[in-house]
Length: 391
Image 1: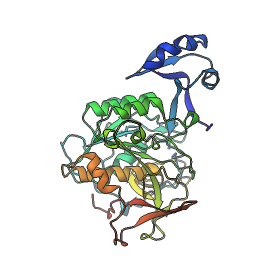
Image 2: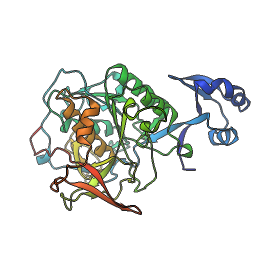
Image 3: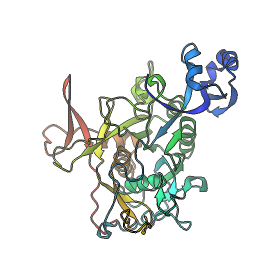
Image 4: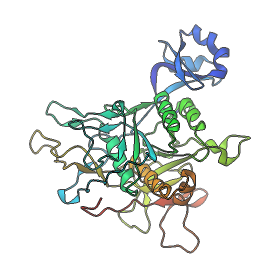
């Protein structure tokens, strides 16, 4: 059984199983306390692993916590970019949002998002965040992660594409709970958004898909696409939600479910024609594609951070280079959104973006992996290259 994180004192049970397990859960001191869709939440004080070990079958599961997987202040490879590499502010658009991003929310400074994003991100007040600071006034935690991800998505798209941000990932510890993510997916579905980016991951109890997120993904229309980061632990082990495979449901055809794309990070810096899996990236046959994930440029805290003590930390000019599968997923999401701008469905766009090059196209790079079954070629998605001063 893998290590997993969960919300203490909370269990999730499908409504169909609730009546059968209700009495048993009551015996452990757990009682109904809300839920989402067909899932019921039971709360109590007895430790969740202890209750799960005593229950028969798999009717209940933890309310899992997922995270940004070691994407924290100064890790891995977060560093400032010189002023000459700033991105020009994006042109405004009033088009309906095409992409849903579930993350930490949009970072605000004096009531406004990062100047690069302009009005290209749609959000409610609860989807905004302000940075936490240490005793020297320098930013800590993960507050800027959502802004960075949204910026990477928007780097890939034409001017009319906009992002809808849902802020559910905790700005301090980078944790997002199963139930909260599921609620955000449902809200995006109700808004008509069919392309969703999830740049977080985590292990689950007995490697089972997280109940709430999986159920929410099943409620998405068949032409929807969810792009999820594969994690940054240099591991072959499956993590979720990236490893959810809705297409494996018996009795339902492949195209009746939304498509989930697990994205790992590639490092093309040494040989752009032959990108390799980044040292920190998770990998394995469950990963659908790889994308640039090393030194990705994006919007960060406002200029002047950090501030004190002088010389102790590098100065940021509002932009940073960050590495991680979070940003690889954002690149793939952005490339799909760019295709959707031509009135193509999310699923059709994903089929165009996440695919191996046609026979004879040796000039199109792929990521090549080796295992006991021999060589495996996996699609590589290159991020749009932005020249300094070009939006």
